[in-house]
Length: 110
Figure 1 (cartoon, helix red, strand yellow):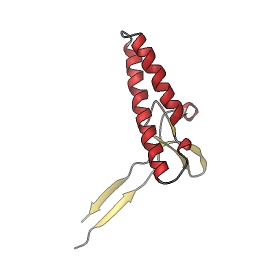
Figure 2: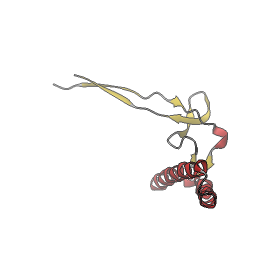
Figure 3: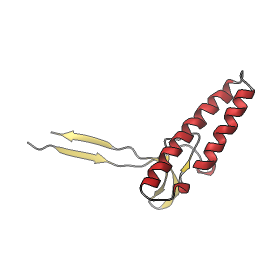
Figure 4: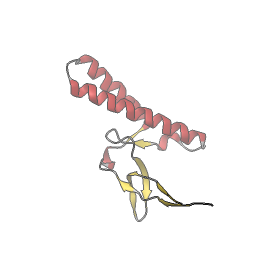
């Protein structure tokens, strides 16, 4: 007996500011700067944490740029937030583009 699947593709706004978005290249440069500052001040736990967060954001930016290149799109268009790297900068119906999450919930109704 075939089942029925219901899906919800709602877009949820991220809390991070769209004004502090960085392009992938700028994020890589920010990683180098924060890691250098963290190495200069080894006792500063805030700098260590910030270096880890920016490193993760740069990894995600590189992954997104690679996916865009695979689709033959401009990798320079990748924008990412260091605060919420999982959020994607995308167009939202009726508003200007902003950082959003796109959760996808599927429910099987058998």
